[in-house]
Image (cartoon, rainbow, N blue to C red; front, side):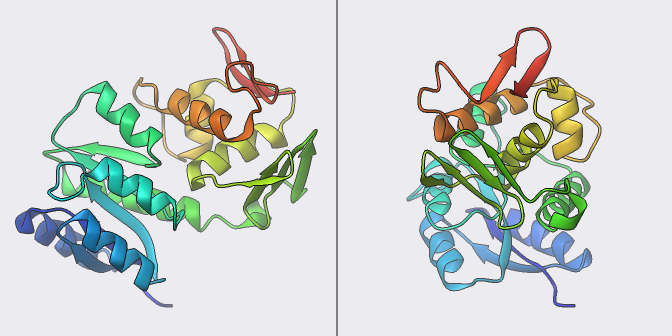
Length: 230
């Protein structure tokens, strides 16, 4: 079985070295980039990359812009790193397409746990999901086998986490899922803390699939309870 490859993007060589060492000890291959431009070149040229660890504060092109440009060419999971720990930074990172956010200084073992969780979700087979591979809800079609979504006849590019959330809600039509239940079902780890990660991902999905995100016709909010698809 070939090793999975992780792309580490950070302008600080010491941080890249530490992450590279821990990835190697966990059995992963690692590619390194010192800035966003180099990272984009590697992502385009190397199809073996399965996950990106991306710093925010970098020269030439910051992590937010790099993440947006990565999402134009790839849907691999992206974990953002930042020395800034404000909620707005987290929201911006998730809005630009990141799947997870880790604050600096970080515990390398925690980062490795996040890497494993993202890759485990990516490898989660279609057979382990709900029985029906294709779910049609009005003009919204979710094809779980192909990991594809169309809305009003147009293809929709979702991140792996966005797709998992949409597939969960679509598979259980009418059932209300609170943020904690969504997190534990999709992230596959205990909720353990309170933030707006799920809310931001729901907002991103609505922006992509809803004709009018301010008046959603697919993902409904049940105030004080959670979210559902009728």
